[in-house]
Image 1 (cartoon, rainbow, N blue to C red):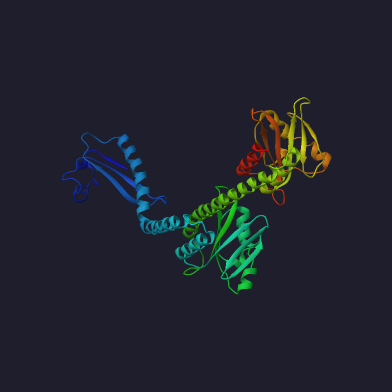
Image 2: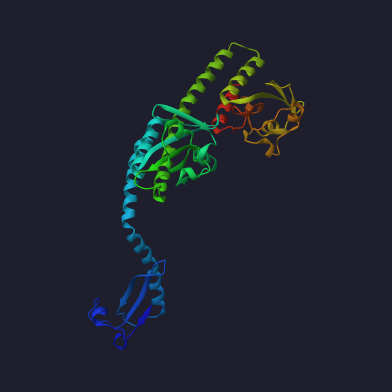
Length: 401
């Protein structure tokens, strides 16, 4: 930086240059604009201050210089930025169109076509993640291919939930050439990006771009484009899932109504509770279902309906069911052995292993707890957690129990 408060006395002063801003330069402050690599890219020049320039002026101008450096760097990348803006515009238009569709296949195909064009890929694929069957599936032409969940680079993306840009598939230790062998296609490079749904960290699908047309491999810019589309793919998949969920809720409601109609002719409490428990367990995909009734005189809960186990009695306030009976709160626990309220003695006696529990209170007309409905171990492999929708459904059953 240079502060010159009398230009006529400075040997470096050149009127042909320094007087281009004003007719006669009396004093001057010049501050360089430096690139991150240390090279000079511009100079800020201030002229003819009413009094003299000082160190505070120099400090403020240096701050402006730092901001100017950022602006100039962006201007120098104008062509790249313009290209990205165009990509974003296309992304916005496509996302608006795809977000309104509920047909997952149409959504996915629209996204693949768009991304393939933007990143100049030869081929584009989408892999659906099936956690229940531990499979990845993709459709190429009229053929559907299924591979193990953790297989290949796609499987690696599912496991790590991170994008992978492979420059040379033959040299990648996770590369699985089985699909290439079946199709006769030769994959040289690939860009693979996870798709998330429900704002979770669980991968719902994987977008894969194969073989860059005009270059040997995909770039960082290509990765950013695909990741942007993957975000909207997740939104679209979630919209489809929500629509499917609404249909499931309607189906559940009809089944619930049907259960009550069938049971309405029965006056035996055990028959009613058994029918409701069985239907609730089926709809919630639970391994076991239990209904406890409150015995206030003995301060206990006793199991009127307990599928797969001998009848038991539990003190009110003890264990999850006892806690629900005492507080009237709904409790949903993904892993009961991490909850200090869980009473593990029943597992020890029966040899059964409880993982997840959903427990809701049953109230009478006076809003007093008269029982507890409990579902245990959700999922085919009993390794899933009960959802908020499961809570609502079991509460509906309990309300009419």
